[in-house]
Length: 339
Image (cartoon, rainbow, N blue to C red; front, side, top):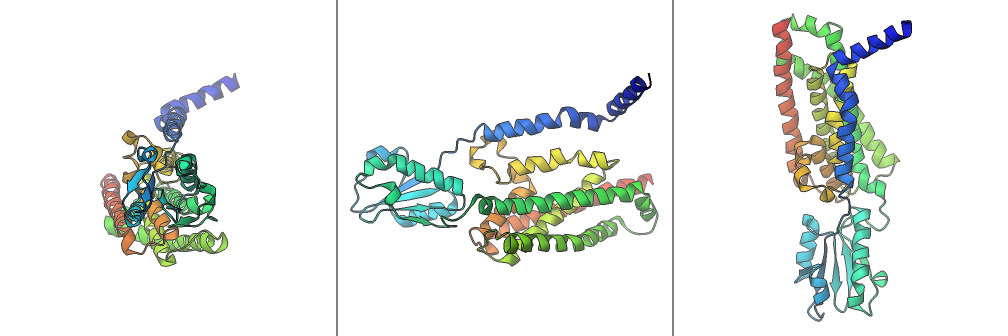
């Protein structure tokens, strides 16, 4: 009898909490669907080209599979623009040139060329010299995924800590007392950003230093540029965490934002091959902060891009933070009116 009463109380409690009910029923379906959408189309077809030097004879059998280039400069430009994963230079001094930033793509390109090599007989693909525009043959999967994971962990922990900490300000009554004081809403938001920002800078610096100099993550660009990206991403996570905490009544509801806000960003951050994702789903990545931060980190750490090369993602991340700060001011203004 006592057990049945206890069970009924739990059932009524969950039914009254619509967010928890939605989390239990629909969040796993959402994540499972995203996994299916990402991995069901994971048969990546590498973009391979072939450069025919003047003395080389063009092969008709390759023209439908490989993109033809008139000269090596055009092929190199396509590689750097991301339109090509690798190409085969035919002629008296044949070689394979790979974009190099993703080991799985490198292997796919080499396999494509190996399969097509009979038309270039008596050459053998395994005997051809291989050049890398970025990275090297010793580059591992962790070097490829590392920049994305670095950005993700910074984003996740800053989002979680800032959201829960700000929520406690509300549940403990501290926020209510602050709102009763003459302090302006924007001053309160900026104060929170600066206060949390100090620890955010320490965390971002520590994590970046540890990943690069202790875990020996590939680093060909400037550490200062990595730090700028991480700090901007952390600022975005900080302001987003504070914003969403305004809509949560307790820590459990704050956690419920994770499968809705954090998990989808993982799928579209570059950790998985975005070229294999369905076209109708690919619009999600460009509206998430982690997408820009992960790409910028890969560009700096693997490709050695300068600050001017990553200016666009830097501006986008700054824009995300400013928008979230403005939304925070509007969201907190609601509590002042009701207090």
